[in-house]
Image 1 (cartoon, rainbow, N blue to C red):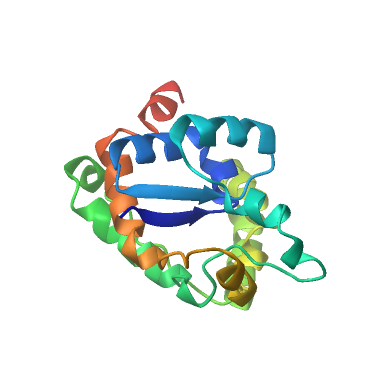
Image 2: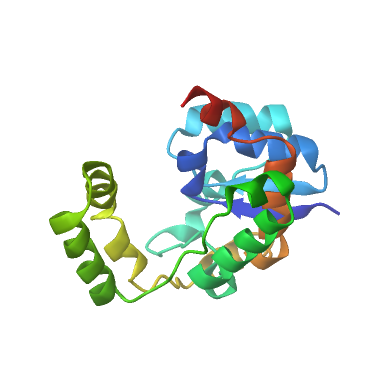
Length: 187
């Protein structure tokens, strides 16, 4: 039996090619994807043999008047847990270890805003530009994001596994397949 994963907005950030490589490399996975460009993904689903949870729910009359959250809900990793698994995964890879990346420090929004102001007042132009680019994103990270998935769980024929069951394996696969190497070389 295939392990089912639910992919949401991150697909738009990392690109469908990553998901395609994951599914090609690990045939035990089946993906249900929530996307903006339904036509493109419907073509991909037929090619890969996968079904889209969002498409199934969009056509399901039982969703009328109900809010359906397709996400991990209570099964989600916290940001700290997600980063811990990522850093632990990177530390097992020699190429990543060479980068000597410092672990991200998770802090409250008020402390981050103090850091942001200090950088804007004293930092070099590149660092100021980086911090400016994060100014709208970082406050969102401080908001609680645990959505009630009971309706989706009821209407779909599966409950997606918690990301903790596949997040580390996915990162390991991305490293092993050289994901991002072409983008990095081009930069």
